[in-house]
Image 1: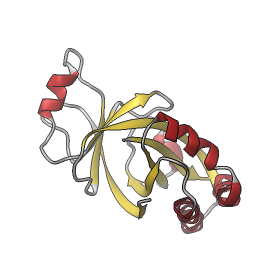
Image 2: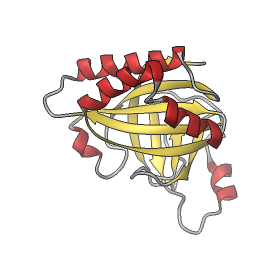
Image 3: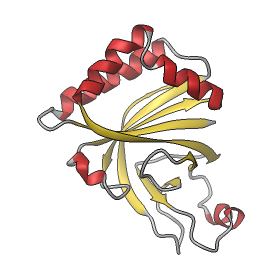
Length: 179
């Protein structure tokens, strides 16, 4: 499974509750009118800065996860987001946004998410096989597939294992659906 992840924040002067209301409305419309290969979405409020530059959000950083089957479904998601019933809700929340960045991630380890996640890069000199063996049992791990923004290579549910430097932030789920 792949996920398109989009980090964003409201423009200056836009109330966070208004922004979240419009954001959730878009996710609901998308769930009711899914694109081929769409498997659901989640919205999180982020407490902390998962990477350098996240301070631009001014404390109101949001993280959208759009789950899809594969890269073909990712293309369909991209097209569908701004067409038919989804266009107006998308454009409404987009007009309220102050900025954003995205990435494509693949689920490497299926597991729990929780309310704390760690963003990190593979330590130099470590193979992927060695890194995966060090991951805590039962915690979800996502690996970046395409570099589209500033986020690090991995997102792990919970704190990182010893010896891995990470930005650990708290997340609060605002919305979740499965298609």
